[in-house]
Image (cartoon, rainbow, N blue to C red):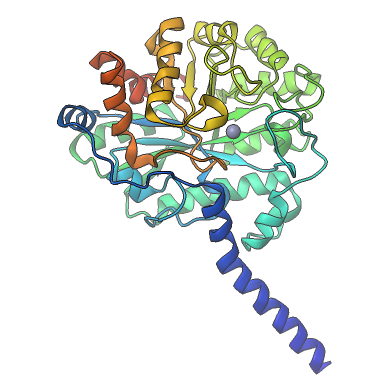
Length: 387
Ligand SMILES: [Zn+2]
């Protein structure tokens, strides 16, 4: 009996040590930054960047790693102190609930999952070990907890009023940052329509139908079926439209994008993407889909990682932005870094001035720069978040 007690105590101790050490090592390994800065740019670029009243980004997976986002970390790509240091007003925090072993851009099934062992190693609540829905709720709660403990420096926005008062307050105090919640892949609904409302009540304001594998809603861009929306997927899209939950077609199969474009009653966006016209991969969007999304009044979030844009330099990011701008207009272009999404990036969120410098180099006007760095996102959210 005593031996058993010691054994259990020993195991608990080992588990506790694992939860302290392993998650940080994994985080550091999966989200490397090539140049950790400080980033030097011209005075012109610095001054213009500092004068931007709203810098915002459509996608990061920082919540997945269980990192303390209230602390300035020396690993990973975004946290609240770095947002404040880098004049970043708003970051979308997107939730990953399942990712297949051997995840790749071409073809994945949903039979295996890497996130289960990760959440166990992180010591997250037992509910989130076995339920994808609870796993998503757990990450929603984590972001709200960070806001609560941030001494008023960070807010989660859920509607137009909260965003507008954040914008007003930030006019006299730039040491304020905000975020909103999104979800990558409706598999965390566990096939239940009422869970759309559950996520909504937990604060989620944006969701993509699929992530890296086909699910109950339809086909992934990296799945097997290439299918469009299932009946359940259509019900989810309808409910999202009713609630005002923003539809994000990043990672969706081409057929899903067609289906969503045909049925949505609200503007849609892609939160992190490259374009086929620059890099022809199944991860990236065709000109037709870029046009279709912009015609809804939506946004194209340009990603910062190699699989979307090739070499992840500021030059390449801005070339991709220029492609979209020339095709559909700058008003539809936004930042969609995919920070902390298991990607390698050139710079972290304090490196955004590098984009301004590069945009000036590539002939963007000040108006275009203001829009793409966050003005477009601010306009979109003030029009499309719920009242
Ligand atoms: Zn993604």
